[in-house]
Image (cartoon, protein in one colour):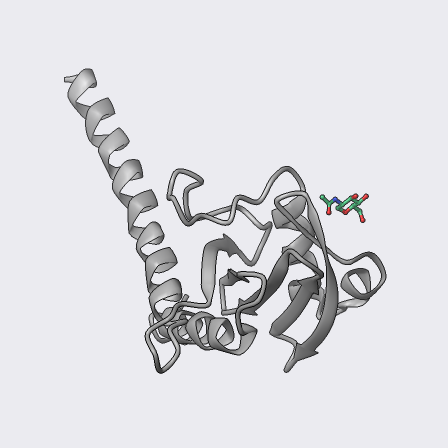
Length: 157
Ligand SMILES: *[C@@H]1O[C@H](CO)[C@@H](O)[C@H](O)[C@H]1NC(C)=O
């Protein structure tokens, strides 16, 4: 009996994680331009409060935040004080991206020469993050991130 409960709990956790990973594919698919080329290559979703990573690193297109990166990204979105991004940049996968701008206290854009760009959009409870391949157009990634962010907000998340 206890075994059965443990297995059910494990399955429930597993299915929750993979359901978030569907949004990684969604963000990338929504970053297509008119010719069908995708501009985002990696994405993840983190919790707004504390920066816990909701998607899994096992997805082939996961943006794999490490160590303190998630919490360091989430803090300014909660305080609405983005000076740490401006002063120290934004770290993702060990790469330091330079802050470009913030819009409406909830969308942040950053880039790093030869390493592409980052788009982050906060919802009520999460931050949707995607990476634009070097040489691709960040505007298309912004579109994909926005579609998923507004969808999550429509679900109250
Ligand atoms: C996270 O923020 C702390 C405090 O500002 C800083 O010391 C640390 O280097 C940051 N780490 C990363 C990975 O951004």
